[in-house]
Length: 113
Image 1: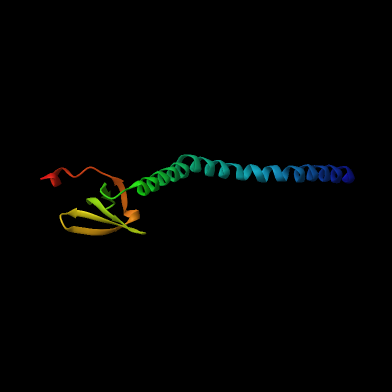
Image 2: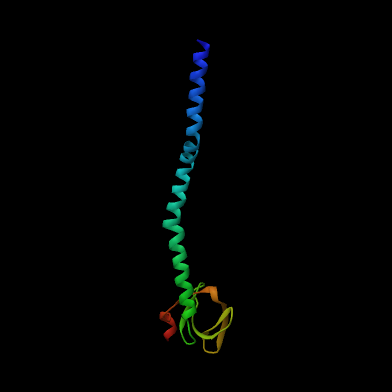
């Protein structure tokens, strides 16, 4: 009788060992799915947006109106390797890092006076 119980226990242990790799994968499947969803809905669109912003910065030319990340409206006067020279008023020029310029913009409503 004891031999019969031992054989059944050995057979059950062998079946459990064969299913162990599948159950390990099944434990990580939710994590993999969560990462995939985050990548599809958050990371990928952000990367696309960054590429569009970089293309827009590369297309800027002297004379274009720009808006900085700080909300300063101005006209692009010179393009350096790592910065833009922006004229915000007559004879008032500031040097802005290229990454701080986000969009070409229209002049502010009160600056047209």
